[in-house]
Image 1 (tube, one colour):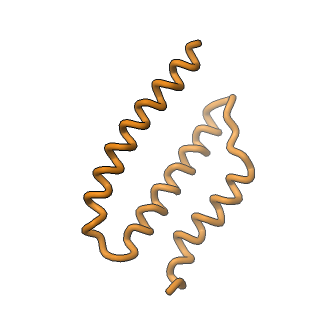
Image 2 (cartoon, rainbow, N blue to C red; image 1 turned 90 degrees about the horizontal axis):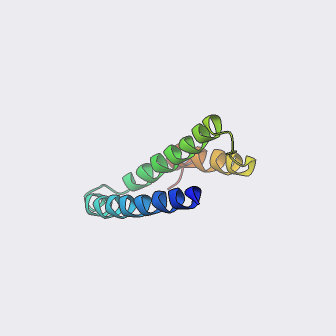
Length: 87
């Protein structure tokens, strides 16, 4: 029962924080130059993937799926390096 309550609490906190951060980011992203939002999205995706890998290291019950490693390698590689060649 404690795991369910903790999961719901984490979900609720994440929902509120994500909503507030999304609203704040939307207000600030209107002033960005074209192309800068792509860098911000790449940074957010990279940070979330890094959090997953860190959780994989420290939590015994969690394992990052191998497919996610492959997808993230391709996605992050494209977002950080591939954008230079895209017109």
